[in-house]
Length: 422
Image 1 (tube, helix red, strand yellow):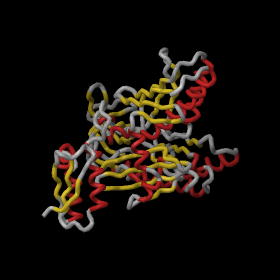
Image 2: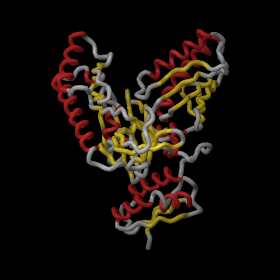
Image 3: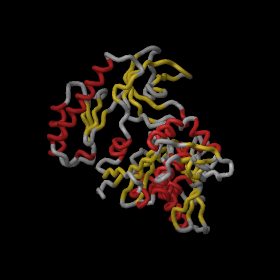
Image 4: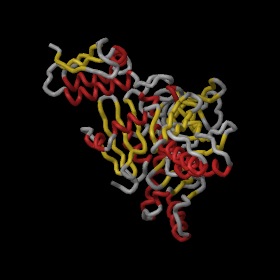
């Protein structure tokens, strides 16, 4: 495994799951349905309009709102998608487009040239600055990332020049096209996974063996559970709501003094891992048992800050509320895992969409030897496959030559059955 980690991509009919591993442990899971792929990273030509007091625009797929200021109605803009919309709402857009490479990020609207603080050595930083600056057109800036620290100067300069050429292509295309249209389509899932964990080994797992060997199914179950144990005698209860996520700390024993502080530190570190695994975003409220002194609370907050430092999603530790909860903000661009896997907020079971994916994956594994297969599923799953998932069934029907999907009210919510159809 690469020191940076590994990403395992496992595709089954209608969905791709991605496991991110670091140090042999699963730290993050993505689930992306073919019916609602992420648009993050795409660059589009759009026409702005005002709705609900915000500047919004239709995209080639869906719509988004401008996060970095207002635009005039009817104004044509080049925008980049920076975040998935929550709960099917509008995606997040910005006008300050950035084009990311492995070691360099091009910033066309910021002419400064920056270098990550982790790139050390005065002479090395000066050499990088000179090499990259010579490769850039006037008025265009860039940021050299940590991943570029040890790369050859020629490679960094070539990447900067390539990204500058890509930006020129985007702006040229914008003068010829009619909005809404993609000037740079959203990157595919493998490219987004590679960018999310730079330097990681990317494994395309065609038969699911690597996914299963890594413990993917168990990790997914853990990521969707309401309560999860993070240490001996310490459990976290996760309650997601539209406005915030509450993470309640439950201790099996009733420690006091230093033992209580130690348990709360473990809980805070566990909460950081749980938030990343589940893709939680927005306001998080961690509610541990009360501690007496401010110094104790500061130690818990410091432990959380240290635990979140390696998370690709930025965190802000906002401090303690009067009610004794540690308030944080996790700024992840992706939808939380629960939005793609669970029924609407308030229910703790997998959605018809997620259970349809499971049934189709089982069909793909077990259909061998059945000439005209019939897939029987619960009624709500059949309804989803007849509606939003109909294109997946059509693709499987073409692949198999024949396929019937039938609703069976006698099946349990998670069950399916595969047999021949005459």
